[in-house]
Length: 127
Image (cartoon, rainbow, N blue to C red; front, side):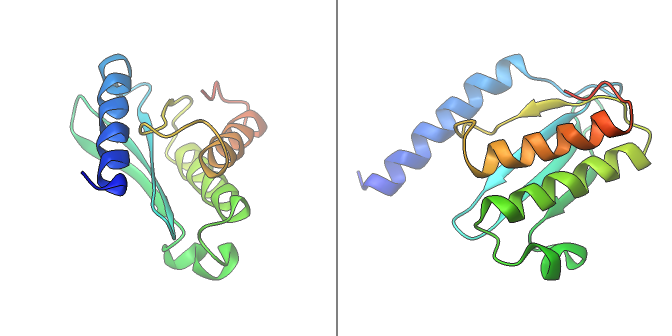
C-alpha cells in the first residue's frame, strides 16, 4: 500500500474513533475540520437534523484575499475567526470540536483557538 494511502486510511480510522464520542446536537453542534495540503475547511454541523449550519474555508470568497495562502497557520486562524463569528451571528452559544482525525497541532490548533477566542469575546460558552 502506498504511504499516502496508508496515512489517509489511518486518519479515517482515527476520525471514526473520535466520531463515536463526538456528536453535534441542535444546542451544541459539531465544529468539523478538514485539512488538505493547500486549504483548510470548517463546518458547523447539527447531526440530529443532518444540517450544516455554517461553513468557512480558505477558498471562501470573503476570506480568499484576507487569508492569503491557505496552508499557513495564519490563514487557519482567519478561518477560525470567521467560523466563530458566523456561529455567534446565528445565536450558537457552544460547539463541540471535531478535529477530524488530525493531530491537535499546527493549522488545526490555530483554527480551534481562533474560534474559541471569538466565543470568549462574545461571552458564549465556546468549546
